[in-house]
View 1 (cartoon, chains in turn blue, brown, orange):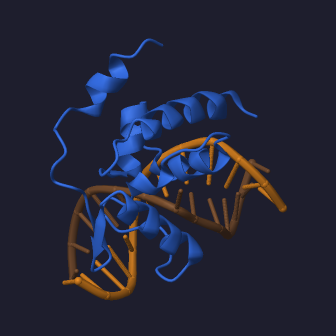
View 2 (cartoon, rainbow, N blue to C red; view 1 turned 180 degrees about the vertical axis):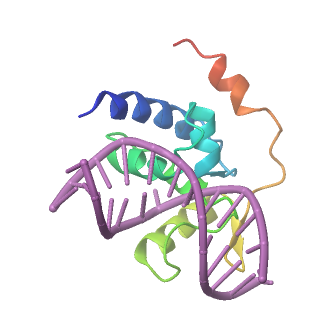
Length: 114
DNA sequence: CCCTTGACTATCT
DNA sequence: GAGATAGCCAAGG
């Protein structure tokens, strides 16, 4: 396992873990938040490798569509998990709950002890 | 070392 | 809005 992977995975997992229920983030946003601005594509890889249960279903594309093929099992699974959290998907686009506060994840993440 | 592969994105037509 | 195109970058063959 490369040194890159270890650090990258940790950063990604921390960010994804802190996505609040009812909200979603794009791969690019997660990557930026983790400190790797151009690694949107690596985010999926990191999540697949995660040993712990991550709220991976809260990570979607920048255009707010799910990253899987529409009729795939994974797509349906993700859609169900989101719906369970009150997130609707209309015309293929996820609609985060509007009742959530605006507390930034930055504060939450940066404020945490290393 | 070269080439292909993505759970990606931004920008044009 | 749907396609096409071009960046992106680690990983694996």
